[in-house]
Amino acid sequence: RSMPMTTLFLLVIVLSIVTLVLAVRGGQRHSWLEFQLRAKDSGFGYGESRILREAASLCRIADPASLFSSPRDLDRAIAVLLARQRDLGRDRSREGIALMDKVYALRSRIEFEQPRYKSGIRSSRQLSQGQRLRVLVHGLGVYGSTVIDNNGRYLVLSYPSGARLPKNFVWKGKKVSIYFWRRDDAGYVFDSYAIDDLRIRNVPVIHVAHSESLLRTQKRKSVRSRTSLPAYLYLLKRIEGAFEKPERDPGLRCRVEDISEDGFSVAIGGRGKAGLQVKVQFGLEGRQIVMSGVARSVDYDSEKNRSVLHVEASPPSPRTRNAIRSYVYKIRAEGELEPLSVESEEAGAGVS
Image (cartoon, rainbow, N blue to C red; front, side, top):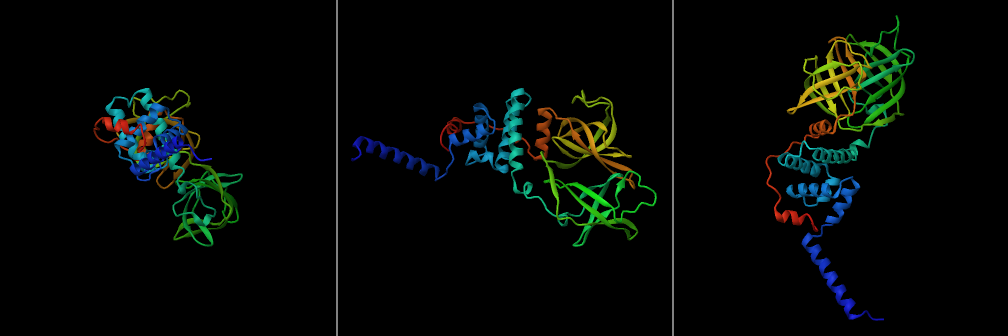
């Protein structure tokens, strides 16, 4: 049967509107509804998603939905959002801190979706010079070492340092398990054996056989940034109750060498040991940061009598966590911002 004229007329009108909208949008496929759905999937409430969309409008980001996939666009929006929160006096409020916590959680998720965090390595032949290693000798202990050279036949490692070795001990022929963290990747472990134990230009080294069976262990959960920040270190009897309140008295002078929201490395004089419970206090871009945790491993340099403690931190407060994330992702609040215009407000409620 033929289509009624009224229905046909309505269909023509609908198609005309769709065509007009597509022409205005230039063929773009994003919409207010798509943005809201993606915001909801990422844990944002309606009011929070509206604030995030306003930030995207201020940045003149063509497709606000790109905030959920593009690190670059989200960084721009966060910089504007930080400034707006500050200008409105919300940067210290519970709601403002909670909002930024969600935004930074989104930023971390997008970061770890990047290819460099997913590729990984399969062979010890892919290790780079300078890679720090932990060498386990069953029945003796764990020793620190560094990759000096990597050739087609074996790895050349600095002479492992750590607990005292038995008298007349030689590495040659010893079975070892090697652990390491690969920057911007994950942890790895593989089994091997020492081919030789010798000196090169009077420097003691060991040669270790390659392995094609690397096991990828726990992936990194947070982005870590190298730094060099003067700090004070305090030894704790217990982690429980080690609040973020700054200490008045100076502690042991040290230097924070890298930092993330769930850990840090700190260099101290003397010989440290794994298992130490510590609290560190330092300035980070005008803010006082206090973190505590347990030293999970230690790299000791006997020549410099210097240790680097690798600390797993207790969960920081949302405010401290946000400050660290801002530093790690190199996001700085932009200058004074004009409030959104009426046109911008209306644009945020319709099709982009």
